[in-house]
Image (cartoon, rainbow, N blue to C red; front, side):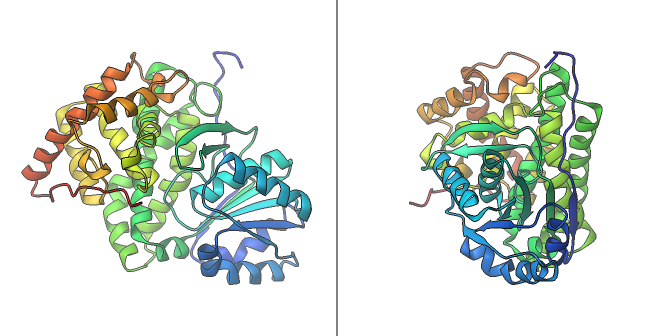
Length: 381
């Protein structure tokens, strides 16, 4: 692609609202006649009945394959074989980002259409034309890019509000990075995940995502603690899913997500949600940018109130464990990683310094604001 081409990409249709799950069959009938649903047993136990009812109403068959938990190459290849043997013409992921990434990759390899029914608003995976593939052990392996986005993304707000509030919080962490990274990508005129330079549209949607979250995240999180859907909840679901999805893909990724990928290389961080690790990357990116101290202070105060980690302690690391920080930094700065979209050169040493410097500053900011001290994270084995 020409170095001067700008592009924006998006799903074919985005549907969101309370009770949207009951329209699944209606929308899928526009795409094909033989859907294959991929969901784990927990998710299917929560929404399977509603999905089946909507399929019967649309005169579509019900077929479900159990998702096995990690979007690895092996799981993707297994799903491709299931699609082949069932003759499915639409692959439908129901669940979180892992199931969605596995189904997007399998749908693409199978040459059929694919749709996503996210049951949480914990990542911006549902709308994008890429999958994050992990090893069987949960370490980042690669991004896989597809020539198109999902044909349909359908989000039932009540289903999202019924899920644990920690998942919505993680989604806010993932989405807050969108504007920080899109802003950096625009400054450096780097290529985005959409394969061209950022458009005004992609960058503006990333900024809108940021504004919506600062205005609505705290009341939305409180509402979801009681499983209620309010206008603030609807706005945060849209910001986490659609605005952040379009914003990261067509606006660009930079340091925050690269540092997330680096964090997956250290066992101490395993078990944390994607958005929790991304938030550490956001703080580190602000530090590396030399952002105004007031901006970093505000970000730490806000994300503490949201319930996101902004210290190494909260992701199982220590400022004096330079060996672990070096592993993170080396993985975050490999050639081709998105950290090279920053508007300046970033070396592994810069990442180590930024990560090590967060702890003392964040702890002090939290104390000054009367906010809780960090609680150490211990990876469960």
